[in-house]
Image (cartoon, rainbow, N blue to C red; front, side, top):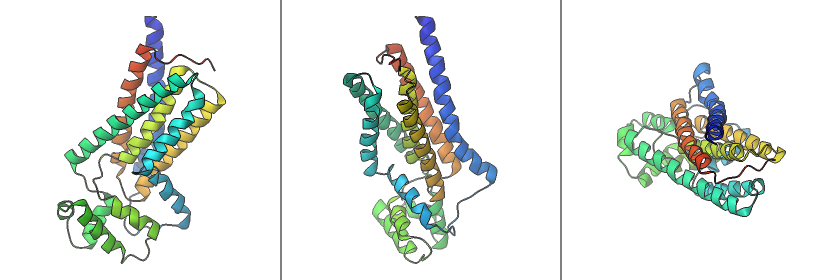
Length: 254
């Protein structure tokens, strides 16, 4: 029994680490390519869907996303009781990861890339910007982007809402957490069905595009993404090691 448990924990570590590495390729590629966001970037019309994707991780839409994703798991569990327990784990994951994110943001107070650009262009400073309350910050951003005709209207509103700090990335932690939950539960239950593989593939693509959107829109630096991914990995490694030891979820054998 102990050997089987140890093997399960090792396999879980390998599986979660593999998909963590997949996400880490995004910031690593940006570093290797020497790409940097700047305020003169021209957004194309085909990038509009990327905006809606990034909004799926923004409040209040993130709550809807959580509900939809939780429902996607329903057919993959052997019974509704296990699914309800899994939803409780998902909720715990969201609360813990976003709580850690909020604490670290307040501790590090790192300006967003686009905020740095706005303050430079307006002759202000990031310190003065963040000394204002959120409403005042939003007004500063709105007033600035009203003069920027090359910036699409659909992203201007997003800038006005995202006037918090950069490090770590809440959207990245959100996306990485859902990918870790998907991979972790499928590994825990030994579910290798085509439906499970499809869900893992979908979550992987969604998470990768979420990371890309945060960089493309000037919300974060690559280091923000990398550390956020590692935070999600560590937290979910602990969650699934605990679940494996408790044996709450029986293998489906699919």
